[in-house]
Image (cartoon, rainbow, N blue to C red; front, top):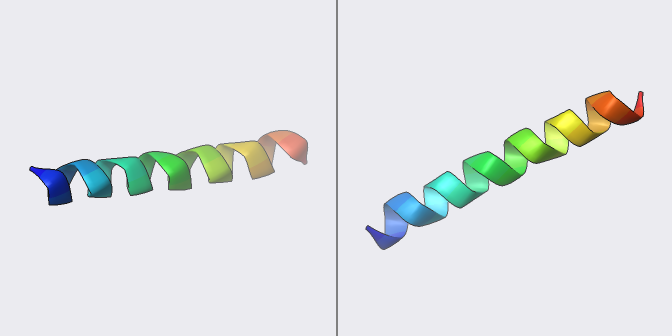
Length: 25
């Protein structure tokens, strides 16, 4: 459960980072 949660957070952070970069451009 903990591992799954951490992976979910990492995936979310990665998506947010990519979205932020695209939005800035």
